[in-house]
Image (cartoon, rainbow, N blue to C red; front, side, top):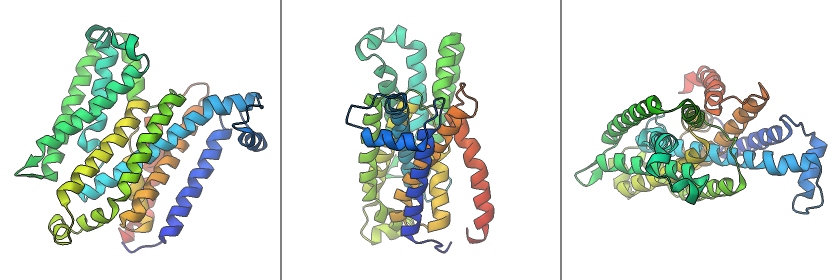
Length: 344
């Protein structure tokens, strides 16, 4: 499709949307904070003098959750762009390389069998046990899928797709088997993790996830121009001087680090990596120099919007974040398909 909006307009609009949703999330919740109170809290951050209820709520509960939401959405949006560029298919998703399914299977093993298989881990790692196991599981499955897709010294994306489908199905079967073995309490814990949530945000985990996503986004910037060349075809990209195999490896590593860190901390948040890049391409065109950063900004805004609805719509009950991302994303996606179908 022809480009409709300039890069500056798309990036500026995405950033403004993120700021607006961030402010909405900051003032919304069981303990409401007015805009003047929020401004006062922001002006006194770091001074240590203000101990008002809104200051304590914002700094200790709401802000880490908001920062985690920004990091999660940015990582998923950026990773979705990389996968769609790598597969040259707008329906590609980070889940194709097994990160989410591997993390889910590792989380299931840890929740249900962890006390039997590794009784000393909870005493050693504490609350980090589940996070580290899920992160390791996501990376391990991604490495397995990547190794299965190697053929004659190169990486075949069709093989990676087939391997991803098979391994994801196997991980799903493993989760089903673990669910049969689980107690009611273990099954509830696993189900809550699988549906995704920002409710477990704590500063130590938030800062690690934010750092991982920031590094991944910085690394992804150098992949924009090569992905533009790969969009023409791998043979044409090679003629233009692009080391296609190296770009594939780097894109997969960047995706695995970002999505692995996010999924290990928040559980599975679906649809963001699929929808955010597609929306950006609809309004900005296919240039990855624009799509990568704009998808990260839009993904962050979508996750924050979904989380705000999740914790306020039926308060004090918190709705599953993964369900909300689909409920919010699908209607908007269908509207944009109708709005721009003439130029797709």
